[in-house]
Image (cartoon, rainbow, N blue to C red; front, side):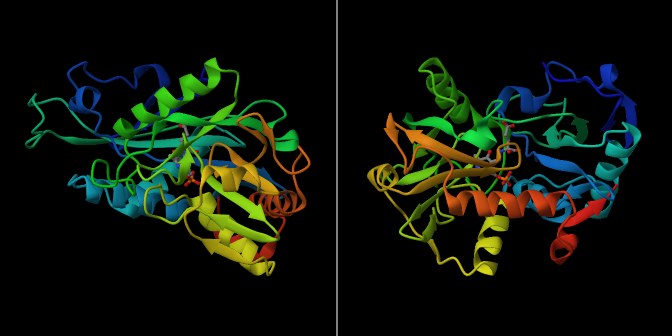
Length: 304
Ligand code: PPE
């Protein structure tokens, strides 16, 4: 159950949590076109700060642009509104969900000039993939569902409707007793998790899927930068599921999932069956940065 906070920002004003409702004929509810973001705010030594706010707002606007949805507010207004939403709710660390959607008006797939609306909610959200996921790693499977073909879904856009694919895959994984699954692209190469990007470490080289059939994850981008700063060789190229089976380490990245090690894939133990050294080093760097303990990356944080 989501833990309610006090206020939600809707179309330019803060309303009470319980009043943030929409009409049942809201266009996006029927046809799934709602660009959204997931952002985290962390409590650190110097107070709370939002991680890579600008990049998340840029991606929200890119998603809307891809979907031919003119955003009703400027980026500056949206960034300020996100900070304000965290502040009024007096949340020290939280997850922030801005969502743009097509409102009430015409029905039918052509949205015409229905209003474009924007809401921003924030609530406390702990570990995404279970209690010990970050420290022990998770058990994952390869999904029987295929990730979107790039000319069926615009995978660079983070849009609600695309998550039907993720929900189906997640159900299958959970029902089979796994914490998460990884989807392959239509050519059979590794794509991404239901809500995470995928990394493998093989013989000291860090590999991740290229941006062809996946969401351009902001955590992924952060990890790539951190790995380069550590002089870890990094390759962005396609790889197969069996390359994952024989990898020394696997981990998933995402705003919600943060940096989650994978200790088992399709019932095969990965590496030593526990988070590996490269994963742990990058995870450690990541958490230091989000908690404001690494000044080199203070420009990734927006104080609340
Ligand atoms: N791929 C997908 C499909 C995805 O949904 C996410 C984020 C990522 C990669 C990683 O992107 P980034 O957060 O920018 O590093 N998934 C969001 C939604 C999760 C949910 O269940 O809701 C998230 O992590 O906020």
